[in-house]
Length: 149
Image (cartoon, rainbow, N blue to C red):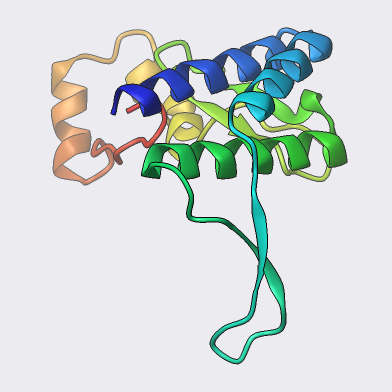
């Protein structure tokens, strides 16, 4: 778990650099991770599928996850640019996202955060009575966010 927590911190630093407009720093950090977690692709064919690439099963589970995550992020950045990496603009959230929208307009890590920004919970004067009413109606329930854990 320590290795995955370290990877999370390093990936978050890439997203932060990109969100601050420092694409060179984001790419430098990503390149460092690519060197530390090299990808070892193998051609595979199974389940009546065409030939395709898999990453080899070498190393620990954390190494395999890191190599796949880093390679996938590097592929995205080279195709679409580091400016498509972002940090949620909801003040209480530190989640990250990849903006795959057609006009590069994403600002939140999830629909949940976007709706929280617009909900009565964030409006001035919303108090416990308002929150209780919303919870009874099912609107105040939160979904588990995956990033950060």
